Length: 387
Ligand SMILES: Cc1cc2nc3c(=O)[nH]c(=O)nc-3n(C[C@H](O)[C@H](O)[C@H](O)COP(=O)(O)OP(=O)(O)OC[C@H]3O[C@@H](n4cnc5c(N)ncnc54)[C@H](O)[C@@H]3O)c2cc1C
Image (cartoon, rainbow, N blue to C red):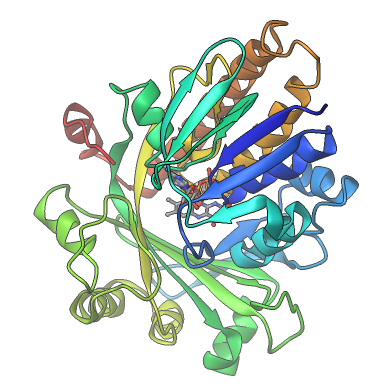
């Protein structure tokens, strides 16, 4: 009989874990509390290691539905434009790649509207309780439940992400909404503008149906702004229905007055190129940026992966590929019949922790150079912020 894994969270970490464990002969079931997981993401950098694995295992083909950028265009505040060669990067879209991985896992293995509320385990099995009062058992629980991970709160109650002092405003615009001259500038380039403690970048990604033909793609943009912890951040993270969020407001729930205010700031702080792109965006969404890495990833038959395990600031485009990598490496660590006792999970934990810490430091260094969260960061570190 094959081993059974229950995976909590049907986003990048969870669905990649499901696909990779299936390749190793595991039976998998994915539990996802939301009915729709497609409304949060933007662009995804096609990292080589992630793409190689997904393609070699027939899980997804991120290189096929991706748009390359061969140049970096840096708009200067004085109006000059620097053209720099970019080491061939390709971008895909969150919804497109996630949709492909989901199709490989199979809808029948994903239970939507199903919320995990509790975990208990011993050396033989792990038992999961659900919000509907039912429970389930498995050989392994993969907690891929994201930044607000319930599993992490249960297992590491004293640890939590810390607000980094800035947010990312984001948008995805069908390219035909953008005037031809602006959109031609984006074509084949990663465009960026660096202002005073603020920066924005934009690049082309496939259309929602995966199309990469001219006229059918989307422009993805991310704009970083320092925002003070407290009332300013709280106001920004309150949605149009009055609900307060800790980390993000998904597309479609932004109050009109917040959106008006941020569009006004965009006109004041960005150059014409980016103001045009922001103005052409129908729905804005926002993520607050946090820092975290778990002191442990393995708890007997329970493991933490993806954002539940570690948060990488977005500047190196590694959040998604790191989540996929956690999953791939995990699937390779649980191949033996005695995976829980043979030390392979501990080796996986050590290796992933080293990777996480390295990526965190790399992305924090970029944020410092951009003037993001600088000066405010330490003040917030003492205020423990629950996500
Ligand atoms: C500002 C910002 C910009 C970013 N931009 C990029 C980018 O351009 N490219 C990139 O590659 N990455 C980017 N990232 C990072 C990326 O979004 C995350 O690293 C990635 O989503 C992690 O995936 P995950 O599966 O671990 O978690 P998530 O995507 O957060 O998924 C967790 C899932 O678990 C579900 N869940 C939670 N609790 C439960 C429960 N109790 N029961 C059942 N289900 C549950 C949730 O509904 C959710 O679907 C960005 C992040 C930020 C903050």
